[in-house]
Image (cartoon, rainbow, N blue to C red; front, side, top):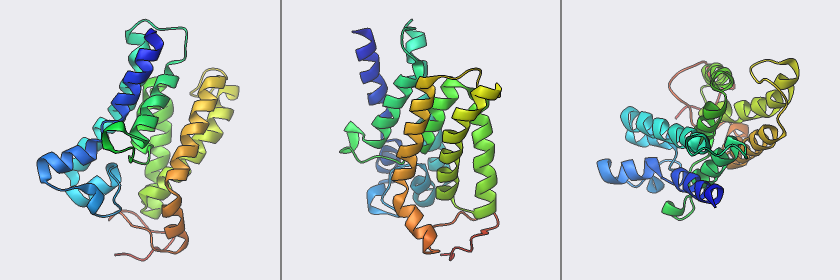
Amino acid sequence: MKISLLIIIAYLLGSIPTGLWIGQNFYKINLREHGSGNTGTTNTFRILGVKAGLATLAVDILKGTVATLLPLAFGVTSISPIIFGFFAVLGHTFPVFAKFKGGKAVATSAGVILGYSPLYVLFLALFFVVILYLFSMISLSSITTAILAAITVLVFPRIHFLLDKPDPILLLIVISLAAIIIYRHKDNMQRIKDKSENLVPWGLNLSHQKKD
């Protein structure tokens, strides 16, 4: 009963549509009607600015981290905590509070891994920043970091680097999160192929996307 309740709480935490609510309550702007129409961190930065973007990023990460730490706070040790984090990502991607149309799962997935292994998420974050600098695309950074996570979660435990030992549940969850992130970026991948993806005003744009 306790496990089921915590899973529901984790999903509801993830369902908080941070960017959408910030836009509606503080800027009188519906993110669904601007930019990519997405309610996640990237579109929030683009439409509402740095303050709103940072607030959305922080809360979306926190959703994943808090959900992952929930079982520890309530003394649940019979099930891997990362499972609860996964339900927060499902909530973020398919939020009950926003007609099941949510973000692309990147920030909340990062929060889940942060709650499970801070050093591992730092490694992934550094890779994300390097790819962002080289190509100036948050979407490409998100996709390639998801792929890296899926590979390293299989390799690192076997060489005892950042992740202590093989964990089938961790492997399954991280690969599932990577799959969600990649699928949610399918439109971005087409734009990257067409050289028309949105850029951030930083980095080298090595793939030579057409700037706005």
